[in-house]
Image 1 (cartoon, rainbow, N blue to C red):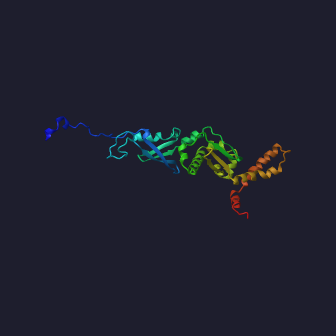
Image 2: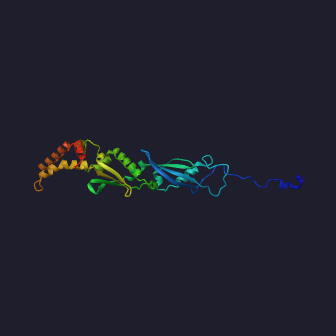
Amino acid sequence: MADFIDKDLQKQTVSPETYDSKIKLNKNEVSLQFLEAKDTGGTFKLHYIVQINPRGRKLDPKKKLSPATIEMETLREGIIARIPPYDRQYLVLKRFDDRKAFFEFNHEKWLKDATKGLKPRTHFSKFDREFKFKKQIPREIGKDRLSIRFEKFLTRKFLDWLENNPSRRKSYLEFLLPKKEQRQLKIKFQNMFDWYYDTQWNKMVAKLKTIYIVALMYATGAMVKRLSQSNINNSQKELFATKVQKNIKTFDRKKWEDFTRRRFF
């Protein structure tokens, strides 16, 4: 019976199926789907779902796509390629696998670039200040619908940035009170303002709290009444400055806060 089949035909003429031992991915085979953003206190994280779609290649049906079957460096390159070039300057890939990827916003680098040569300007009134950043935030951060998370994060980090750089506090905020009067009020100068980040216009806004506007009025108001525009001389200017400093010293912040909590009706 064996002689019925030619000897040449008895040989195997079709090679067995071969598969890649490790799958090398290109950027077109990797895609990202934004999932969520999270303010962790120290950092701002972006979480993505990773999707892999190998094209034009044979895959062993017995093996599932996993870190064991993928060349992870090519997956890493594919994930990063999905992030816009500008964003790559400030988003750092911290952790990833074949299903998920986590990026962190490098806020320190961004603040350094965005505030280079920054000068504040008046915002609506003498008691408000705005800081228009010179760099846009990464577009990927804008995918988070709850923008308030990032606004609070960036406001907090901007205040830390001011706190750690006394020279910046001086140039940005001492347009209202000199250091001597700040010490007499016994409060950190940054805390005298309400701060918020304006996402639409990419700027930080500082609004002097009402209680300190009242303090300035209290310190100057009494003396303004006594001086007329026609007879101000050097001695009166010195007297004015002395009286203002004295009024600042006698301003009782606690009593004023107690008063403002009372109901008028």
